[in-house]
Length: 67
Image 1: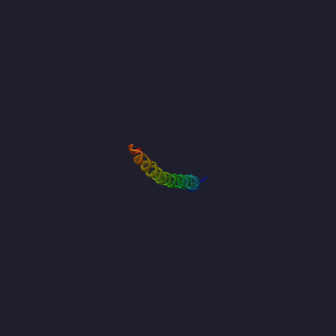
Image 2: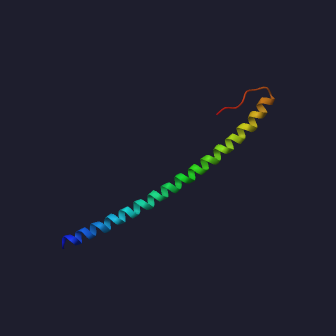
Image 3: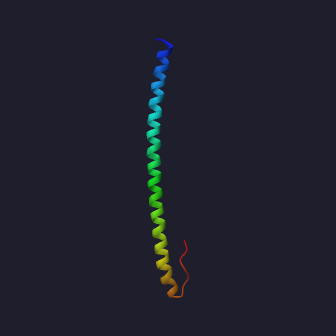
């Protein structure tokens, strides 16, 4: 077996590993993006609830709700 054959085999193995890692990295990025979108949505909903319940509490003479 010639040296060039070994280099070719190593290059193919390297390319396979890089391809798998790239796919995993892209999947992780997608998950992180989805989680960020959900987090942003939940933050908006929390602000709506805080505004609503804070206004009720103020009418009753209480303090505002803080999180």
